[in-house]
Length: 547
Ligand code: GLN
Image (cartoon, rainbow, N blue to C red; front, top):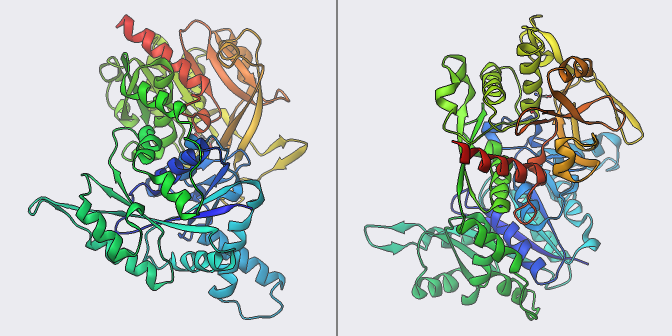
């Protein structure tokens, strides 16, 4: 039976609850416990799949094909535990389950209410798989006081009440703002936030206090007194230069000890932190630096490509270099020559994306990288565009394009090199989709195998013949272009096991030009960098020596 840690937030949003939860998960693992992390999001979307990246940042995809919150990415990067469909839930999903049951008659004619029907649904969700791990860490999205959050707070209150005494603890993450005028860290917002929590029946065991400065002993004692927590359970969480220092930093301020103490477990052996020491050492003491251009369209919001940024950092960790990256809005290249913009970079990455906007500019970036022999990494849309670019400029089919763009504009302008896939094989099932299906869940989602061509560059990089990677897309490169493109050195070096769907392309006469239909960034970890990102950064290091 698992013990449960509930993590809530107060005062302001974006304090890094996900990161704190993930780092705590890593620390509990370092003490020999097994963990699973979960995110309960109060918003009403059924899942983040249909949300714009501007709204909610990246959509993180799990092996079992769930489109989830980006915090699940942090969980995986810190714990290495592959997240599942059942690790992320929203109010929308909870209500939709409840309403489905109501329509089926499962409630036997009862009046359906937030308490108990919605709260029961939330509690059932928290219980899933509880026998598999020592600790289940559940993060509640949003901040205390949000209207949508109330059923979740009520559900975890009931949950703790129903579990054996001492099996659940509550961590509350808040902010201590610094007032320059008086030179003080202010504790009042935290006091109010805890008051709010207590008014709905939740008493935090641990306060995690974000602040830019050291918390003086006096303020710590005051927080303990007014918020009714032990003084050694007021944990300072200072800002860090790298998120990968978080497990070490939280250990140094006693978070893991405080958590075990709250469960009345005496913290036995020293945690095994060598892995994190090595990661932090590599992050803080790089031996060089490379500069990567990320040419995409959701460039205003870094979170839209969170996992890509992290995976690049991991590639740097592997090569002991600092990877700096700049986001470039591809639309610029529709007006201006890309060369002056891109010449100063050691490598170019074109990430995933949806819709036609910005794609002509991304094609220019792909062409620049191909012709100038600059390392190019195309991910999902970035692979599709690499193929379209080759068909246009090498095979000379000038109007080569993707069905996605024609479907969007309702005009027939392109020769489709990339087409809308409506039927594919998953395990031993055939999945069929229509263009008119509703937006949620019409994509090829989750883990699929690919078979790598013997002797190809990717087979060397992966050191393997078969790989499994996560997907999230509707369109596929048309196999009909394999032969025409091979003449020009573009090899389809990874294919779906049935040989029908191109998964990877590479250029044979180029130092590093690889496009992948999947999202390798989702599986990269600081202590286990993804081979493609590790090798891409290696190629960037070599390129930087040429410049
Ligand atoms: N829009 C493309 C598709 O649906 C690519 C998706 C992506 O980059 N994730 O196939």
